[in-house]
Image (cartoon, rainbow, N blue to C red; front, side, top):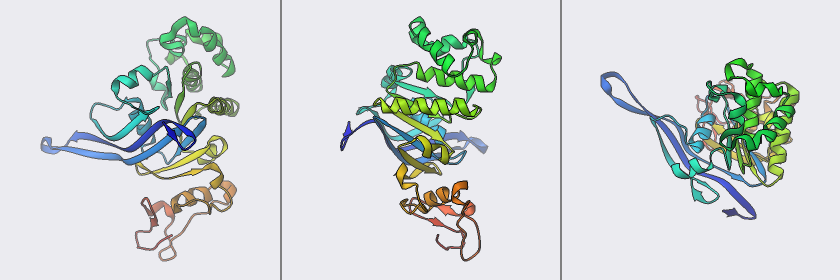
Length: 291
């Protein structure tokens, strides 16, 4: 699929995710956590999805990978290279054309040595690639013989990154890949993502750290309350944020340390933006004043 002169690898349109649960008197209820969410990842770019913790960013990755729990209900459409991303297509792509770096190290199989997990279904053919990845991320080669419970948190995080970089994937979905890593390893991982994209492939980087996204991404989608409120080129996050369309995007950018921790306050009641209501088009204080 081609949008203008760019090839669309991943196309998510109008995604909604809700969870069904039973309450008192066995009453079934649905709680919607993602609504009308749309993102596109182009070949040759890193798209960062930035939002606060608990805003549903990981659910976006899980919906794409088809690993939501059984009580999840989804709507909208998802396509990879122009083809509907249905269950059969996902299963054919996972670990091959699409590599996933989950946020939680609990996704490592506790009953399998980590070297085998990095090599995956390809097996011994990837041993050289696995050893190069371990050397790059400062993992002793003997770590391949360890089980996940024998790893530190940082080692487990490096193993998860290794599972993605050893493949011949066209798309990497990285969900908060750098927490727990020392600075040098985190920088190395981000450089690898950049090189991966520069080879004509795609990266969907999910993070709560807008500063990190600004250092590596080509475009940034601002995520709030289960939807994307704005997608902008990295260059638009400059100056006083005047190039950004949504006041919430400008507020996030202005609140960075290098921008003076500027927070918008309601001129009427003095409330900070942390308690404001945010929609797709505006920020509004509960007292009715606008940004």
